[in-house]
View 1 (tube, one colour):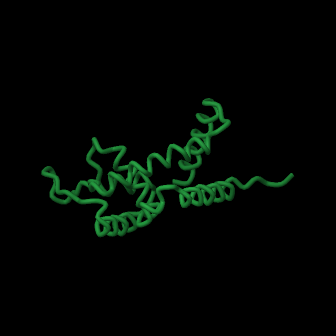
View 2 (spheres, rainbow, N blue to C red):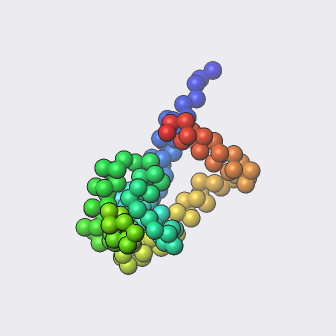
View 3 (cartoon, helix red, strand yellow):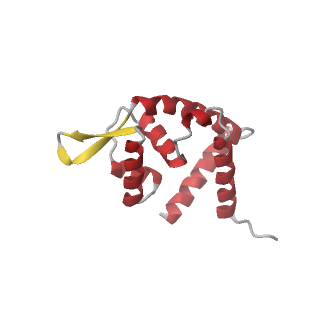
Length: 143
């Protein structure tokens, strides 16, 4: 019996998702946005009612401090985010979306809902719950 390589299949699935994102009807309007920028914009938009800091992005996306720092610097240069000081700690900078990023987030969220519908077509709610549980367990196994 042939061994099933889950990591390989997840990698291929991720590649297919990225190809679909590239075909987005909004892609031309948001072509300055990389995949990572897009995920960060969506996360910030979904959590607009909270104060989000660099450490929150590191934890959310399982990426290093230096990577997040580089991404945020580029996002500032592109006019997508601003960093605001907070009164409780001068070292902390809250990350806030610009108007430009808000417009982009609306397009990306629309694309994300379409992608989610495509990915989960034919799954029962119970299967989706199990799948989510399995993915979370895999993430915990390698963290």
